[in-house]
Length: 323
Image (tube, one colour):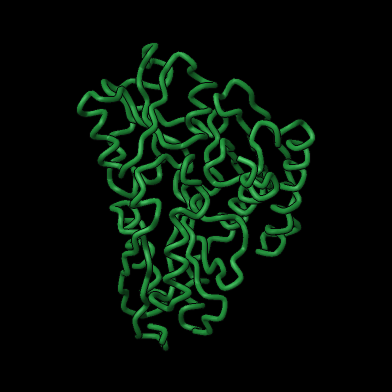
């Protein structure tokens, strides 16, 4: 039986058990509980991505952090689950839906390096840790003279490799560092115009069962949903879906609103970063309504995907099932 039956009840929130996941889930849960006038119970869940030490490219990025959370939600072990949106598969789940997308945090990547070094000032041969094929490709494109070192583990573990002198730097999401109170470790914030990040990076996703049926929970989800964030991450994620690529593919995408235009730019990299394709387009929503923003997101993503495919993106980043 669901833990939510009326305002003043209990909302069971499923989350990965890592320090970062717990930190971001607590922030969202506090807002959700206040909006629903309900108590919050956190339900930590272990995922394949947490237990495997293999690289994301080896175990397959799509769903490795999301599958166990979704199974717990479908089994009624929790009422909602909180994901890092960039970890969520783009295909719709027949039993689940995206209940809310709160306002996005900083979408940029951050370099955390010894001695205050930046991407430009890293010495040749510097060892930079990351588990992301996209970041590895971007390093190859921007600094082919440094060495990308495959790295897994939580944020503290990764930063510890730099502090211990095992690595010269690590690449991490700025949003995660901020949510953990570790922004002081950042030595260089990489601009999205030059270094686009994973579709949805910096945003969180709250998933619920399609037939949740609880009005107090629905009102709470509506209260914390951020329409512009939902539209921009939709545009970015539609690039992944259109290219049939997984969330660990070497693809960066950035969408934003400016002067009533919804802009979308996407870059597809070869694995070593030596080759890349870029497409940028804009669409004009008829209004700021959720429906019109979503229509604009679909329109601009369709044009970006068509241009990328027409220029050979499928050869640079093959569809996931072919990799």
